[in-house]
Every structure is written in C-alpha cells, then in structure tokens.
Image: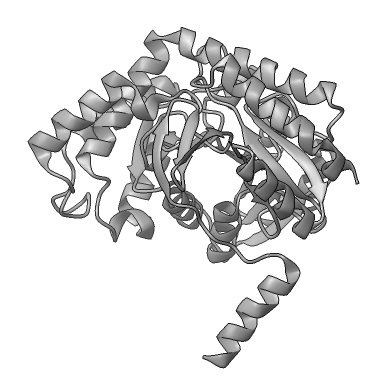
Length: 388
C-alpha cells in the first residue's frame, strides 16, 4: 500500500487532494457545517425544489406506498407507477416522443452513448464536456474528437473533414456548462448537425428548469426545435431529486431500454425519488415566479461581483465562477470564505483545465437579498487575495 500513500502525498504536494464537508442542515440559502450557519453558494438546487412542500409531500406519499427502494431492476420488477408517470411528464415537458429514466445522470450518459454508437461511428464533443460524457465516449469504442470550447467553426471543420468516413456521427454538447456557466451555441450546432446528417445530443443537466421562457432548457433558450434531438438531463439539479434521463425519439428510447447496460443491470431509481421529480416538473410549469426569483438573484449577485471587478468566467447563468488560477491559492481563498461564513468551494483540475482553478459560486431562488449581500461583503474582503 506504500505506493498508494505516495499517490496521496503527491496530490497533497500539488494542492489537488480532495475532502468533503459534512452538511448538518440546509435552510433556504444557508447551510449548516461544523455547527455554524453559512451562506450556501455551492448548491445546484437552483429552484429550491428539493425542499418545496409539494415535492416533499409527493416523495413522502410514494415512500409510504412503495417503500424506500425499488427492489429490482426496471425490466425485472422495479418499474412502479411513479417511474412511468415521470417518463410521460418528461417527454411532454421536453417536447419529445418518449423518455427514459436512469438512477443517475452519469449512468444515463454512459447508457445513451455506448448504446447508440460503436466502432463504425464518430463522436465529436466540446472540449469542456462533463467527465461522464468523456468516459462514455471512450467506452463506446467509437472514434472520438473534440472541438475547442464553444467553437462552432472548428466543429464545422471536423464535420467537413470526417463525416463521410463514418456510419453515424453524434455531436455532443452541454447546454449550460457546469463549471464555466456559459452556454453552447446550439443554433449553430443544430444547423451543422442537419447540414452533415449528424445526430445531436445535448446534456442539459444544468439548463433544465432554469433556461428558456418556460424552463424547458437550453434548446428553448436558443430557439431550437427539439425534434430529433437527444436531450439528456438530470433530476438532481433544478428538479431537486436524483436520477438521469433521456428525452428524444421513441426509437432511441426503446433501443436504450433494450441495450443500455447502465439501465438494464442496475436497481431502479427509488419510486419516492421518481414521484418527487414528477411533482417538481409540475411545479416548474405551474409556479414560474420561482424561476423569476432565481434570475433576480442571479442579477443581484453578478452585479455585486462586477462592481468589485473580479475576474468572472461568465455572468449569464446561476453558475458564476471567479477565476483564480493557482490551485493552492484557490483553496486558501475557499477556506477564508468558509471561515467568514460563506460556503463556496474551490474547483481544481481535473474538474477544470490546468491553470484555471476557480471559486465556483451558484445562485438559487432560495437566497434572500441579505444572504447575497452578506456573501458579497465577504468576497469584498477577499478581493486583495484574488488579485495578488
């Protein structure tokens, strides 16, 4: 085991060793850690639906009716009414022919990509795509190429050079990037997909419920029709539960149901989680004021950071990263914020590229003006460290 300890020691030397903090409670925009309440600037629960009374009540009712777990894989004995109701609602919400739910978003990406592509195919993805997308591309045995972040021109070049050599081409992009807070140019990318007879898959984990006039996500925000597009997402961000899904053409969903190993060979999502997600989708559609409050808070937060002239990676979504660069300095800043009552973790490689370590802040609808103002005051005290 000495060599394992050596690896851990090397992570320490590079400022890359990770640890977690145990969360004792969450109340609105605040989090209790080590017995102290802090402003919570690290949540993906963008709409606060994880604690919404309707969502909690739906989970409780399903829990009492079906128990704590599904007890079986979906195709054996693990499909319950909440699963089917959720998939029907997801298809309607995403304006797709059908939908299928996985226990996690990671498993969804693995199942979708490895089922639909193989050695005769080409996968093309944004360089900053999520780790689950990259892992799925590698496991698929398809050829895999990346284009520079958000660069539709380079994507066009790759398609022009390579499309004719492959049976299928699947373009993969995140709708809203989880660590940068920026959005793919989906109008241009969808046009290229049509031009080159390629399939398009959007990972909308962070866009669903947040982006678009009705919260349907990145495609709605970009004015792109969802017809024929593979829309992957998670149930663990704005939807406030847990799980992953694909909404898209019925043939793709049926093939995944029959062939995706990460769907077939695992126990189903607990029915209570499916029921919670189903109710959350209804809340998103019936209570648009929650999303409006989120965006009011985003504007409040970003305007405050801009006044300090902090180096923001982006400022047009609930994900607002502050660029630092050095790994150790990033963690020192995160610790300083923590000690002053703000929980905003440092993000380091390999989650982000080398030299781009940052403080990733995220805004939710649950933050009060006082929460945000208090956090801004703490950031203001830390400006000198960030700029040094």
